[in-house]
Image (cartoon, rainbow, N blue to C red; front, side, top):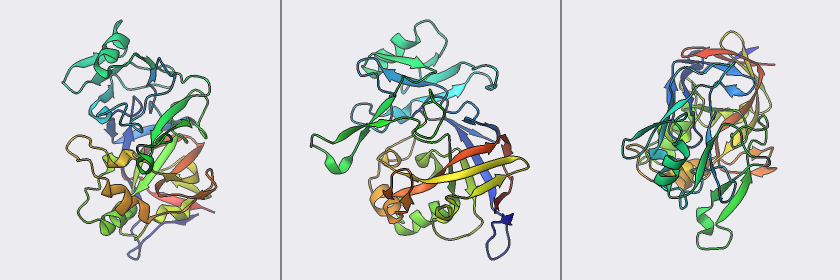
Length: 288
């Protein structure tokens, strides 16, 4: 087992954890979390589904679902493995709804201007719409992408159940684009790792390896995390900024195994090998 260290021998550690109870809505920052076979407990437990198309609603298509990052979701009680808890959903105007209220779908449909349903199980062969800025105005500006390619069936993850990001990658993007505001919120990881001063997109080198976090959690890093328009969108006090992609993210184009080609990517996807509890300050080590 090799401990990741920088020149001063400071270990890489967990700095924050994030859970997003409703897909594509703003989520919750955590001090610790249970990581199960299906990812961080309670993450993407809910999603909205477009009744007309049957597609899972995602901020990846901001033309159809504008300002979706202004919706916020939080669990009404801590989630448990033996049962799903309801969530509070705060709308852009401050209205607060609860997922188990009888008119939840009608209220959400009214605010979104489309008929939607809040679900805890994705449709069979679920798809989501993704907007491609480089094709704007063309017939292929929006594509239908599969959901949960490497995650359990019925879940709402874009691809894998767990997403990790390092401070080194954030700093590398900031170096390439100094005027950009590179904050964790833009990239929506589950686990943020402080890589203690290491330089560059260091998690590229983790792909194909097994890592351990804390005492028990073991993960197989499978792929870099390809990026789309989402990190450029406004959320909270973060402004929309297309330079985040073209001047920051696009500086890193590793080979992405599941896509079979090099793509602009930041962070990595991981598969859970041994579940466990992880918290702030837990060290990261590489097995092998």
